[in-house]
Length: 177
Image (cartoon, rainbow, N blue to C red):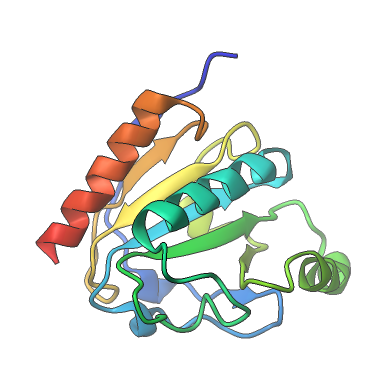
């Protein structure tokens, strides 16, 4: 299968503008990750398995000594050089079903925190499109409070060329911090 691959520069955002909760209904504090590059891996249901593979590969490459935990999206763990954050983009979930989705994600992902983007604000704010087909990866510099232009990538983690470009871009962000 041919991998879909795209790199985009979108528009300037500040993560502080986006309030999201994890599956345990705890709001993320973006300031907790100040000083380290952030990689947001976002997906809708159809591309969630591929997003999970991206997360595992990124974690192994950049944070091998740190393992995601329940409070992963709220704290910076010792040894984390890059904050890798999983985001489930759930734009089609009606308000009266959100409680069911929180419980489902609590059960399925009890070992790690994951942000739930019900209204698609973060996904749209970052400029992600078509997350139902392939996951999106946004690479943001160490500052959370300053408006930045995220680098966006789309594609499969099995695409060796894409993986090389993503890893190189993240490595350069680590050096710049």
